[in-house]
Length: 312
Length: 95
Image (cartoon, rainbow over all chains, first blue to last red; front, side, top):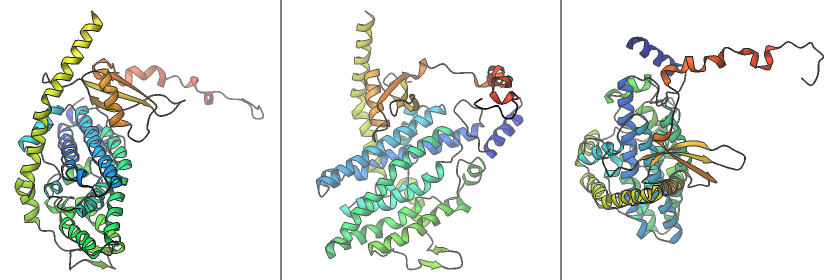
């Protein structure tokens, strides 16, 4: 079969909603796009543990601590499902991780913002996980089988992440004026970075069109961002918090909320590595890999020794 | 593969008595014992399983994707293996 025929058959499968599985023929660019996107997604799960992990020892009570631990453990699991999915495409797991450490691979910019107060942990659950869910629910129908299946599992697990954050903010909003002010401050700092999580405007997004044709992506960045704003504004109202955007207004005609333009300079600065915590996050990951080296080696040595005993 | 990288394992989980083990994904672990423990932590954090199998991925043999048509041809061409192939007069019951 010629390359053109293979490509045609591949696109027919995509158009007929037939999932692509690991050993199927796929265009090299499809494979590379998926490896880039899925590993980036995996890195985001893993780096995402850092701002929250930092608060586990300072959670205000045992219930919140147990919840935060469970959430952070989930993020580790999500990273692992996704690294597995990249391996089904022939990617080398260690190489993808080294690409994160060298700065070659990206992760969600949101994790380059610090979690300064306890309210930030609530805001991260509500807004950051909320935005992630908006994106991931759409990805449950992505064309690559292993990615879609990982997304289904991740979405099932993540709905608690958002709810626990919202509940935690609800407590602060019903608390003292200082507590409510802390919740408002967290919203002020996380609102715009959360909207940036959906990526550049469609017109600026380099990978969008091809990814939509291949059904890797089902909705554009701007569509998902709009859905997130529409879903989140009423939730803020119930909390009694104010979204930090003077132009936020319901547009009767569109049936959507209008909102201000995002500060794209800030977005690109953070993507390029100049956010408040970029350096710290990567350093933490590199250190974790280095410090874990002896554990991985010891486990290998132990496995080898036991295998030898067994065969002896 | 670097010499510190652990082998890849495929994970199969029985969600409850009466159902088959089903493939859920893969993970890396140095040996079977740790592969089972990691599988528990990665794939069954919410009571998804009562039994786990792990198999080193290198031990899995699969049908060749390029020969799928020939390989499954014998089964696709024998429509007389299905009950709907046969005509039975109206009025015949319990068949």
